[in-house]
Length: 362
Image 1 (tube, rainbow, N blue to C red):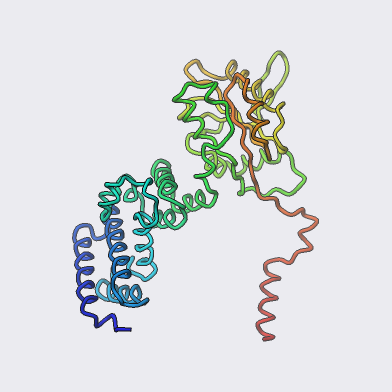
Image 2: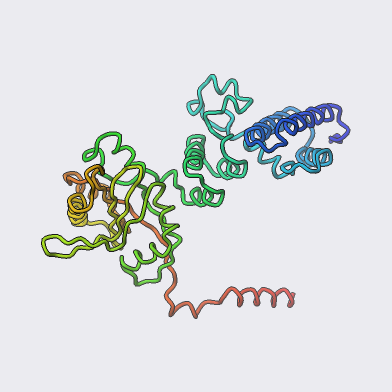
């Protein structure tokens, strides 16, 4: 295998890359996000082309990184790892990794700069966010979803990673609802996309036996994480919200107001599988809130029934003739070991001590 560093074609190409780095550095000192993303995309394209057409062996990225860092010691992002990300970035948004119907044909033919990929909005989020997305999303459509959600909600990188891990893309708008029959078209579509299935309450750790009140209490204890999982627009109104109806007392599990939908949202928790009777009771609560709480300029109150399990056809039948807008979703949470079993398991400290002991013995 030839020495890459002495190869004439490599030296010429390296000089071209150095020139591009200088250009980007002069324009924005690599600080303007769009220029940085554009540079990474074009560099990824160049790397892919050279790896395909030149015979420089497997050490191309290592050598290129070493040479670039020697020339530009103060610039971040020239490590071998990041150069590999640049290559993956280009590959993800190129036709080689996506079916033709996911990109406009004229756009595919012109792919070479982010100008032709502006619809992907990749240049509007930081590079670290982009890495999270193109390394975990399965296709461009899913990537676009997370990019748009990041922009709309101002997600940090950690929050984005959490949403990717919880597979938000495949949960958003998947709840079984009757919104199309009970809400006008613009609001029904927005309401449908607002509700997920299932909801992930993995930030809770519940030891059996527990009931709905236990889950309610923990959700309010972790209200910031709960609101994050519910999504943008939910404002907490109250837990066990009291309503007096015909001299009888009723208590709604959780009451929210949604700022985009401009309506109250009643959430009922059931630590069991769904049964049709639950829909009737939720319908009753929605009627009560519409009459006793809702203002004249508010939209109709929406109900969300959260249960541990449901059957699709049974749930659809239960909602079919319900007059009020509601959806049924499942929720998941982490179930902790009961206290009486915890003592039977070794602690982290005990495991570490055992590992250290074995290493000494060896």
